[in-house]
Image (tube, rainbow, N blue to C red; front, side):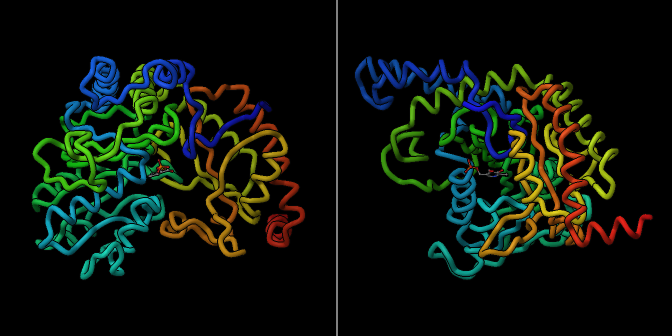
Length: 397
Ligand code: PLP
């Protein structure tokens, strides 16, 4: 395998070797069905329950509150549709303009009569220039008709953290369910759900060194719940379908892996991220940070390099084996800036040249220094061939 400098950990992460190892017996000898009555199945079921306990321990939750799922998207969809099914008389949903499509697309489709639902209203909360949520707007949007508030804990593009505690308090006061998409915070900051005013939380293993294809929904005990997948009695009748035992065991192992590395994430990973960010902002003129400088997860930095295309930067980084991602997506042939940066009012010329760097516990200082060496000349070269870049350079001289 070619050696890469992998700074795209918000997209997905490397599976930790200890996670891979823990999964192997369940791909070979321990293949029993955890729902089976025989001892062989029971042995496997015990490992599923160990994984549930490890995840609960990471979250400060009770194991019975955890429902394993296939991914973050399934978990988000389950939470939202469960809230609507549990409160059928309520017809109002609140979320933000900067959610991941796993939440945003479902909510928008519900407001347009999708998923067999009609008559739903949707409020999309705005953010300011630093990507911070307007809590006043949330307070005035909440009404007796609100079935659910779904607000992400951290944004996947900027890393900005939303004040989930305050949001939860506002919801509690109005008797409204609060779901948070925590896909980008688990494993990056400490979480103690026992002390948080949150009712449901979604997570996805592949963002923190578990394999792809496994996630979970946490539902606080006593919260009304309606399953998305109806079938067998698995997960205490809350999600039909035989659990993917190897993946669930991997998720449990990854939970203890990231718990062990939480302090390192807060110190070493944060320091590396800051070194990269400060270095790039100091050496590249017309570069700006997108998102609140302090209220962010420790591993993420989103930087705009004005007057150049993010895609061009990524391609040139790729030639050096450096993986990052851009804040624009190529749709129907036109490069549309991300909905997150647009919601923050990032100017067009900056939004197009935005790059997200996301680090992990596997990122090294040498890797960061290589990016600091390689990227500034790339930006200079791209600006020389950009008409906007040449104009800006001429205006500076
Ligand atoms: N929510 C957020 C904030 C994400 O970043 C992602 C993935 O990028 C998802 C949901 C979807 O997770 P999954 O890929 O596991 O479906």
